[in-house]
Image (cartoon, rainbow, N blue to C red; front, side, top):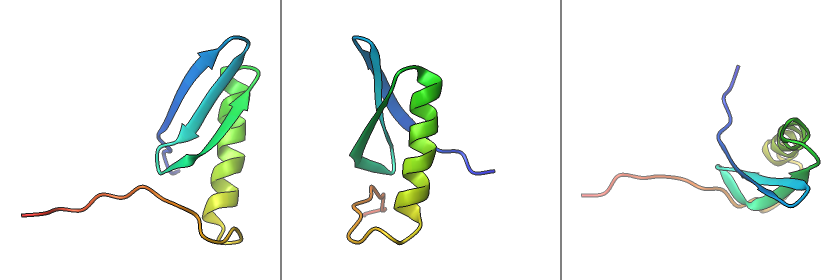
Length: 63
């Protein structure tokens, strides 16, 4: 099982968040569990290769 890291916060009645690997793709839910389900669906869509030009976050070593 793969672990997905995500950033989230509550704004009024809604929970907002994005996958750490894909910071440009924000989603929301009515509860934290609902947000997590939307994030799982978003990950499936973004990692499937069916969406062109997906921006991602990466790391590299320098020096």
